Every structure is written in C-alpha cells, then in structure tokens.
Length: 214
Image (cartoon, rainbow, N blue to C red; front, side):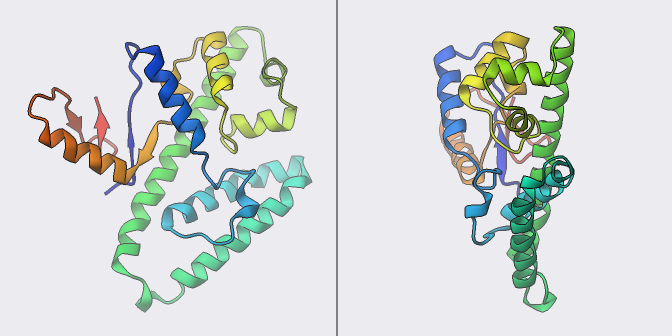
C-alpha cells in the first residue's frame, strides 16, 4: 500500500476550493523541511527516514556553495545513522510491517523528488521565455538568493502567496506548482466513504499510486 494519494486540481475547480486546498497544504509544513530539521530528535518511520536521506543528498551540492548548511547536513547524518542502527542493524529483529513500509516510502519520496525537479525545470523554462531568471524571481517575490534556491529545490515549501504569484505571473497551472499528496489514512477514508455513496460518479484508478482521482 502506498502512503499518499494524489488529487488533481481541475481547471474547473472553483477558486474558493483551490484557496482551501492551498491553505490546507501550506499549513501542514513537513517537519523535515530544511528550516525545521534541527528541531527533530528522532526519525519515527521509514517515510521520515527516506525524506531525511533525500534531504541529506540534496544538501551535498548546496554545502559546496554555502557552508552554513553544514550543521543541518551533519544533524541529518546523525538522525539517519541512528535510525539505521536502531531499525536495520539486526535483520532478525526487523519487523514485517517495517519491510512492507520501506519500499512504498522510497517510492513516495522518489515521486516527490520528481515533482520538485519537474517544477523547478518548468519555472526556469517559463522564466527564460519571459526574459527573467531565478534571481529576478527572487526579487519579485521579495526573497534573498539563498532562500529562493531552497524554494526552487524543494527544501522549503513555497508560501500560498508565492504559488499564486508564480501561477499568475508565469501562467503555470496550480497542479504543477503544489504537491498534492495527502496522508494514507485520509486516502483510505475517502475510498471507504465513496464505496458507501451509491450515487457517486467519482471513479478511482490504481495508476502509480494506491488511489488517484481521475
């Protein structure tokens, strides 16, 4: 079973609904985003572990440009090492549910990284088409250069206002700017509820993720 579900934002979605979705997404900032990571004392799941590894690798290049990232990367390395020691060192103690959790968690993080990469390339392409670059966008949004780099690379979440500005300025669809993953327990609730609604015309598919609205 996968951990999250993707809900597409249709071009016909009512603006108030889009606003609600944006607010809900922004309000649930991942604790493993770069500005919160040093507050984390322990990784509690395979998903948290995979996201920590992903962030650790992303910071490898940024550290070469800005040494201030080094303490964050060092903290991540400690979290990752402790999780591996506590959960994967002794194969005889590895629980079945942990093994089942590992592959889906890795797949989800890979999907997130692909989304962030695609979004970055799309923003860069649209900026170039309009005679602008990343530093120009930073000025437009009122961000410093380093902060803009973190946003573009998915190390920090864009604010709702940033997403709306980029959407209107560069004509990039909202579904290409905001990751629309939601928790698996919510996805299961949606599935169960839809099965009880006899008049529902919503159809679910199993393409790529456990559940996906089409």
